[in-house]
Length: 346
Image 1 (tube, rainbow, N blue to C red):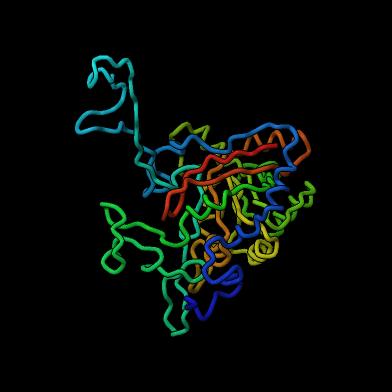
Image 2 (cartoon, rainbow, N blue to C red):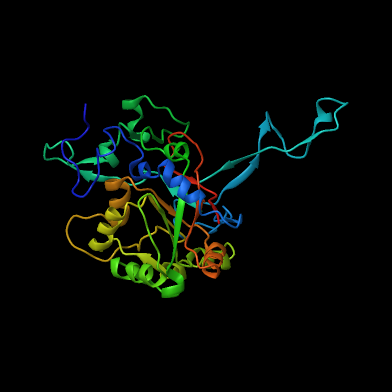
């Protein structure tokens, strides 16, 4: 039974099937992966991840905290520098084993399609409901503590947190491997705050002769992650709030270009990809309009806080823009985001 009678204007709900959970990732076909592979000419690789304990602290988002490592334990015994002779006098082994408490979207990350939904009247009864891409429902397909008694999902001891649909494991199973195309906004607009609408983006694509094709993963360098690294774990929120270029999610022409271009994902080195708060509008609206357009309407995943300097410098020096991108998230069922260690191969 179809979950919705009406889909949002400008969305692609149902275009990839009534139960689709991949959205625009369906455009990363076998041929698109081969296009990425054909970009490998030098055999050089670039790690596009920040150290996962950056940006440091929680001033950028008070809900997200740095990872906390600790030893695993057997009863009250921590297994770190643990001599096995403690349990077997003949053993010469020493064991170390750890675990982590991790905010999934603290550092270099993917947003799963369950990250942002919207109030939308999908069933046509005149009352908007909490919905996600392709009509999946809050409380049914994406559940939290308040939904436990209705779903029977005791997903963890702290109460359920589960994207039963649209979880990040869908990205992991897809592989997130294909052709990346880097657009160096920092090189053109500098480190000051610049809102990038359609006109500003086209200016860079035209100036650099960049070709963007359906199925490409668009990678945007603004210099933000480089500023984070320079702050060495003590981020200055006031500086970062106005640092670097950011997409203007209120620009209708930019959103239409994202739709028409056929890009499969947007990956950026900044926080949120788009400028937040967005340019002020009036009336009922999304506070994160680019997230709304990409995640909710198109099923187009977003990635944040990637480190792009070394790759960007190499591509510029060699007159290139495309590369092989391999960036699978953790295959953690029902997670809403995930750390990632993207690798670019050129």
